Amino acid sequence: MVNEYELKQQICDIGKRIYNRNMVAANDGNISAKLNDHEFLCTPTGVSKGFMTPEFICKVDEKGNVIQANRGFKPSSEIKMHMRVYEKRPDVGAVVHAHPTYATAFAIAGIPLTQPIMPEAVISLGCVPIAEYGTPSTNEIPDNLEKYLPYYDAVLLESHGTLTWSTDLTAAYYKTESVEFYAELLYKAKQLGGPKEFDKATVEKLYEIRRKFGMPGKHPANLCLNKDGVNCHNCGGACGQSSNVGAVTGSVNNQAKDVSPEVVAEITKQVLAQLGMK
Image 1: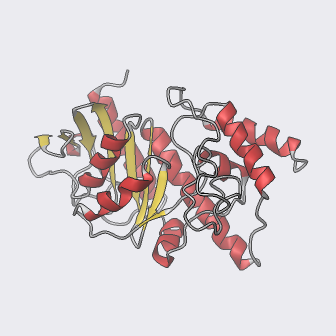
Image 2: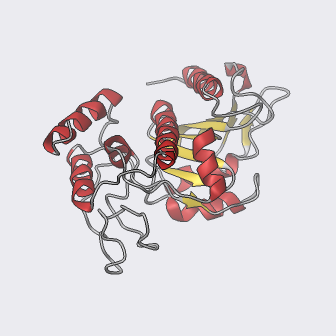
């Protein structure tokens, strides 16, 4: 089991990763991790995520109140949205908020990442919706975010950035990487005339692979929100046909251990072979 100091060090390591990968600038972004049901670690406000050391990290309770913070440091003003994730998703162990350039550009343009264009994105992310704009540091963001929490593990924050969460810090960070990679590929494909999307049968095969492997977290393979039926592969392309399409399409085992990137790569390889796309 990771102790508190090691978890603080991991937060600093993830901070360096998002800073070095141009996912944040200056003092942008914030990271948190769950110690137990009543104690959480988080990055401080006004500090570059690329230059943190463990003594920078603050400890708060489930309401975001300070339990411990060294002199000169106080929790991020965005801690409210992190706490809302932990409140509504007890399976979550870490949350990462960043401003990766391609994904944030989609968030600014008001375009959700919903087109099924690559196996990895469909299996690991599904759709990435846009949570409506809220004023930073207020309850507007967590209030607008809340309705997406039962169904997704990543969202775009309108005109703001990305928010991802998962079982632990590494997994939550990988979600951020995946969202940004998906956004970059989608952007570049649009410059080449538009991406070729998977049909609903192909999407459903990919969703079934996810269900079979019991990957942790929430995923639109489980439930179709039936928002507008446009560019939404939540239910394998059947959105809009009925009000409860995809309401029960299998379940993800939330108690399963997290799946490593190597396992996901092997799953993808097998799926591509089955689809004749190897």
